[in-house]
Amino acid sequence: MQEACVFPLMSHTLNISARETCHLLDMFFCNDSWECIHKSSVCDGYDHCRYGEDEAPPSCTTDACHKLDMVFCNVSRKCIHKDWICDGDNDCRNGEDEAASACSKSSLSNIMS
Ligand SMILES: [Ca+2]
Ligand SMILES: [Ca+2]
Image (cartoon, rainbow, N blue to C red; front, side):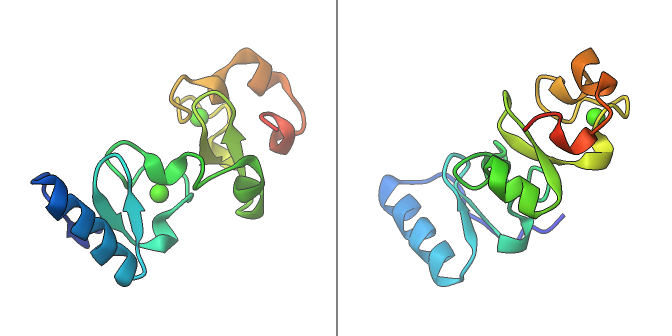
């Protein structure tokens, strides 16, 4: 886990400068958890921001997920790896990747499109 620059919740003024500093460093700013993460960590199927902002729109959309050869959880709004469909673990937050409808489809890439 990379913890490149995690800014503590302090004053509103400091939070704004944290966002600007993050952008100056060409990193992704987590809007809700006020953290900076590497852009390569955005939309990769793993939550890097505390609240998963890097795996949710507007960072990740159906198109963005597909470009990464991943699938988009329509309900929980995040990208997950195709291999995670019906693998026994809930990877979409509400388990839609493990739903009977997902597991019964033959074309996994289109499950949540
Ligand atoms: Ca991520
Ligand atoms: Ca799964």
